[in-house]
Length: 235
Image 1 (cartoon, rainbow, N blue to C red):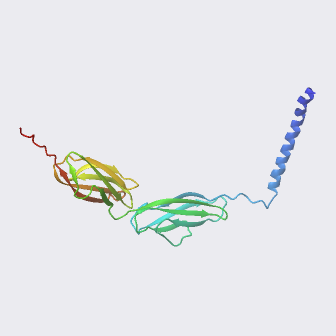
Image 2 (image 1 turned 135 degrees about the vertical axis):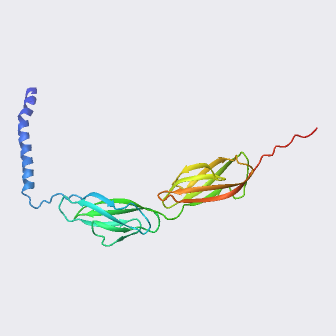
Image 3 (image 1 turned 120 degrees about the horizontal axis):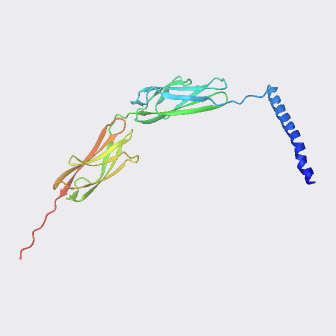
């Protein structure tokens, strides 16, 4: 029996290979002679989506152009969308005019390219330069507050701009004391040592905007109290 178990697979294997080959041939022949079977429809392929400018002023117009092909040989259609501003007709072509909004910031344009059954999309961004200066507000210390000479002065401020903030600087009596890179939350905290002479002092916080480099500031006055060394009592 052991000998029969060894020989039997060797006799069946060639017939199994012939049967498999026959089945594959029949399947291929069925596809070849089936005129009703549709080929697989592929999505359009987008090669590029470009703007002729990516930094603009409010209300300025930019041209967006998409390049796409279709492996199925079908006619392509185009649908455009923007996150701000407005599109100028016609809106069903591979190129469109985009008018920027009045407020500075980063805005996005997207195109959807479709054939008869499937679609593909792509987007690109443009920056609108804000013509205004950053808005800066010193939260603390308070106007006219007194601080002891040689102590540490904490300063808290807020700074915002439509294009974001590149840098925020702290000045005391016109002298740069500290600096910080821009923060997404707009909150800035500084400390500086009060080594200036006793008397009135001016605290100023300046913010520099991204893209435009515009500067905004806020300032207030404090009083630095000098340390008075008392004389020793007479005996």
